[in-house]
Length: 458
Image (cartoon, helix red, strand yellow):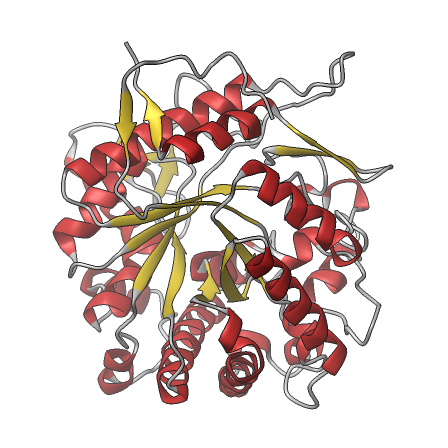
């Protein structure tokens, strides 16, 4: 595989020995086969059928057909030189009703996939939950119910027992903020609720499920590491005014600290407890239970895409507004701010106990197309990844223990409420034919992996 012309520097920003280079996906976004081999519906299958919920009425019914094409996809990963691959397991494929009989065919699929990765020399990181809650559990209260916490722990134990010999790194939950706030407050993710009290109850139950699943993993005696994946977004005040500084702090509490503090310090952020309490929305939980959320983990996964600039406002639950940023934006409308990944990494090392970190998602959506010569040129994505990796390297030099990087995403896929309108992949997917084409960014990334370093600017 030849590299694009962008790899041309004599100087290299070298990453630590043993640094892992990979890419990430999620089950509902790529697998398809939603009704095959015993898989039952998830909340996303139901949400996609709600009129107006997903752009163009799309769904993950077929997606990238990875369920049938996984061998081809592993061969592609191997061609790119990926050392590690982050995937998620579909809960409704393994335990169709969420809390009952285990589906043997679901386990067979994932065992074959994991064995295939090992045969290709690719080390998996497996996420237990990437948003596809079995629909039967949602009908009984979803993540707002403690019964779902218990069901998740039983599901996790099943995965450990059946697949644990093939998994060196587990992540319990992907992006609890999205599970709680996008799914139950903002309402543009499944299950589409819009209630603060529900969202806060979901947030707590998801963190509780994580902590108990970590404890269950320890009980197995399996080798390997376990952690959780958070999406983190630094918040910058729009000015030095006291109101804007306070608003940015409030956004940070809502988005970052509400999850970081209990996980890494065993307590909810005091300022946000007061804020939510004044609105009568805080669920009643004991201090002792909150302390259990800080069950020791082996690593923290960090998903980073953008930063926010915040101004005080009289509107909204948080009394703040986001200020539009100048400069380049992705087709998701997100500002491109590479320095933010450095800032959030340094902040983690400064404000919390030392913990190994993996960048578990980082990437950008741009309007890619196949050129007449069959090549997919994506210089903006290449530059995005390059500039963010440079900032990750800078954070490592500043003493942050970053162990690996997963590009989001391995391939174009179903992008949740945006359907198939957004292309995040370093591999292009032609959906009518399911043909995969490595983009220029993929060819460039393969060279970065081979060098374990980034061509330095200048």
